[in-house]
Length: 179
Image (tube, rainbow, N blue to C red; front, side):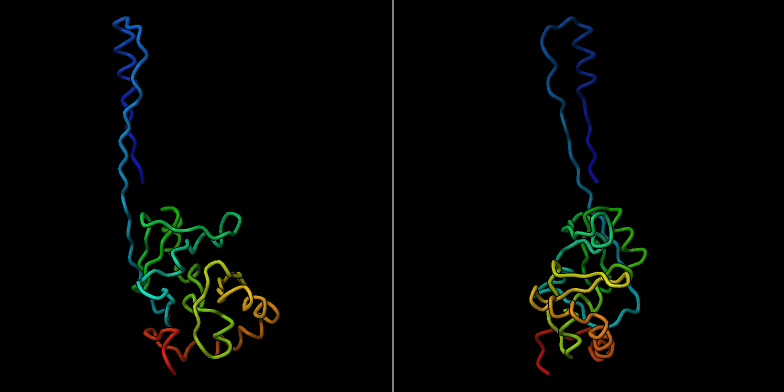
């Protein structure tokens, strides 16, 4: 949230009253940024992909942006953060952060942001936030373009297999854990 204060109007009135012939000085501007962080927890299960290190979900992309506007994901901001089940989700606007906080399961990627195709094959792999598809109102990520093309050939079949495999993964499990 930004607050801007302009002081030019007062200066203009004062100069006009005195008959000054000089142009008024440019407006003084003060900007203040306020960060908002909301914490939400529910009974969602399974691990969330947060990259090699850190706690950032969906590679920092705004999870709500996939479903709004032109359906193209936009990067989130550190100014609008929701901590959902101990993972950090960033948003492009306070409005998107509020939508997510109200109903995180509706916007968070399925399978914790792991690759939906890999999960159908029984293992975890990172999901690329730019390789996505919304199916029946749910966001699915894939590892890369090549994998996504394979997944697109039989989404219903892969989803059946993914849904069967997902309960077998614990919250603490990572894609790089050895079997």
